[in-house]
Length: 294
Image (cartoon, rainbow, N blue to C red; front, side, top):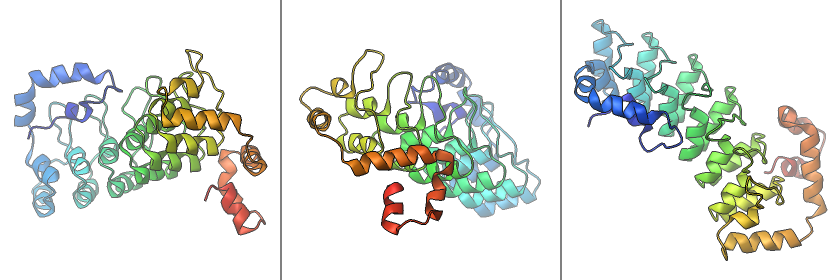
């Protein structure tokens, strides 16, 4: 089937600027398909031997279509890590962008390919996009790829990277109800209060009636009394008579355990940048595990 750089943005209303790109791509669809190189086809289909032969024959690994889709984009979108390695070894640009700003790393995160993401990052891919570009960590959070989220953070992506129309990765994961990503982001030190504008992650989880994520956020110290732009608390933002509403009402009326309050206070004092040092404190294993939410 025909795939262009703009196809990677279809259905992603969180990237509003992609809509104009779709019109452009429609007009030039025939040309975009026609100018695909044999390298594009081999990378797309994961045909490593054919790809290597084409490279040996002198084909340009940085050839792009009219939409600036490279063979490396195709390899990563197909989770073909061996092809990605071969292209990079031959000089492929790991930070190449399509006309709508999509990088190979974004594609790897779109399909949850931790192996492709690792290869790209090991070879100089930027872990974090610019504010106006599609963001790999937001995409990984939206798609539920906690492995990609962890990899990106390890390579320097900001766990609280805030894009105005998207909010933070944590907010994105809550909207998408991806609990493993929510848990990973929180354990990596994401600000539990920071969402999109005045809308907190807890508001997003409550609106989706996702009690499991609501409970997780509260365990990490989310403010149950936070107000959004409509001056609503999370309990007022969730569906009426829902399980989450009932849970929040009970939670509001119940004093929190001293152990939970102390744990939150200690973590706040330690700070995100030093959170990993808790492992080295002379504390009993049970207490270290508790402070690290294990």
